[in-house]
Length: 148
Image (cartoon, rainbow, N blue to C red; front, top):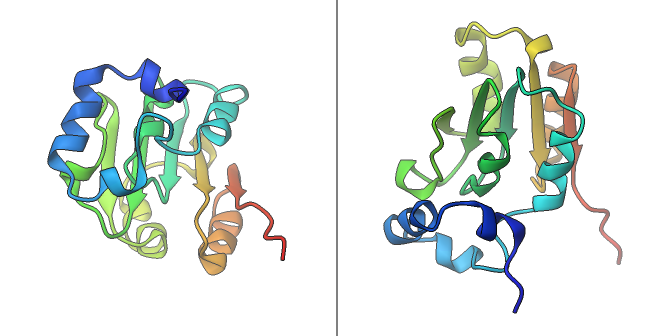
């Protein structure tokens, strides 16, 4: 089986730390899948490194590795806790709904929306997707089309 790109990029001890501390990561991730890499890697092709990346729905945040050289990586996730996510030198996490983060936390961070790029990828919350689109001028909201 092929390893995913992030599995090859992230130091083994960083991955092991998440897998050892998290009770749920092994049910969703393994050496072939640590997140939806293509979406996040694409962002690195057009967003400058001085930008703050806000990842609404970051889950275990393995994709934060792509943004470790950016101004800051802010992960927002619901249902997980600090030992469930990958930490980088520039990462900080909020364990709450994306709606609560946008309404209650973002205004307190002292960040300008124009200096942030928000990713809301594979989050099946249509209201949150719309809220991200309306609130942030620079964002990527992606959810694959469902074909029945």
